[in-house]
Image (tube, rainbow over all chains, first blue to last red):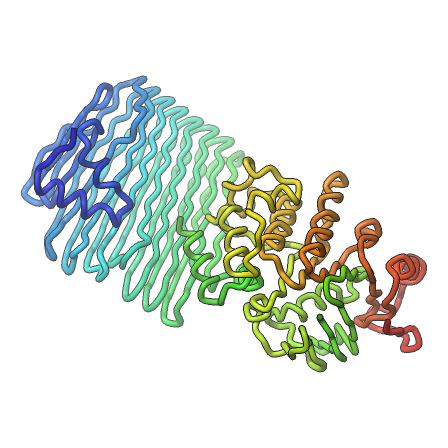
Length: 316
Length: 246
């Protein structure tokens, strides 16, 4: 069964550049939440997962609960968008993933016509003991990038839990993006954060990922890939704090500049408060690796084609 | 097919290659033997036209055309390619895509990516979807590099120590790939330390101190390499009377 609300269809189509299949988003079988500006167009729960949504003057409030032990076979689709040229959308969400549950979310955020749009996201996430949550988020900010996107997330991963998130914005312009994610990990919990952004024109990108390894044996990875072209400015702040024995953390940042006026900065910050913890980092900023380019050129690609292959691969 | 005429290369006040004269014939497997530091990889880089390796003297001729000033990709589109000893790694690019790139942009080879992988002893079902990144071991990456050369179907393949870090059982695959390239009509310039790999060559040259000392029968060159080059103290200081161009 396919839902047929006109506005929902329009929103679903707008999600295509953000990697979504509109038909899937419209299919009534799939659990999910769709918010256009401040209107909730779809809010569907399934066995083991409850989504409660409430419209607010500037957006929506959502509470998503996964029952302990629930295993959701299909991903939960979340769509947030503003279709007019101007507007403010504030999404306040709370995720509660019960102990031992397993769930994956695919989030699409699209602002295809944006000239002056603000999208604020505030999320609080609890991943229960032994639970697993994956959150893959793809954005599309239109060709002009007239968007300010400010997502803030606080994630608590309890003992033995796993939280894996991916933020991707590689099509169109980015606009202003300021990502601020903080995860606190209990014993043997795992957190992997992965952000990929292709900045163009006058885009301004700040990615701040913080992982606090509070429990023994906790493991965290903060990984960022940014390509900055034209006049884009990017900054990556990857912070990992080892507060417990045998905690392991790694910050991995690559920023590639493909234009003479682009600027990039990286601030890896590691703090060890227990001598048995171990943290590492690697960062590379600059042009595309010469050997990669020449390897592809030795197969017949022009320099521009080779750079495109390297950049597209990295941002996948 | 390939002629190097009086090639010299200096960098940082140091002579790396000087008066290199070499002729690689059509569909010939030509091995270059030489101890570490004698300029073998530099020679490969000069022929491929890599940045920083423009000769300070001499000419590189390919099928009669002076290609000394051509960029890497233009040489590749004329049919020259290089398999690096330590190949680059690519995040997010699968082995299948990497091989397909070589096939589409290079010489339009007739072997599929799966066939190319089988030739180098890698199971397609296991490797085609893997990324060409640091999750591949050095040996696996080198074999993927060879597969990519096969996929390209070049006219001249420069293989820089393709047997380095390859387990002994897989050496036979390397030899098979070299023979396949030659059967396809390609000339192969083979840089190796392995005498049993070098034995596949039709002719061989000995590189010492940045210049070619001898060219000729591979067995004779291998003997010369064993008896003279392994103990050679002439790195970058060859004796002129030893230079014999074949």
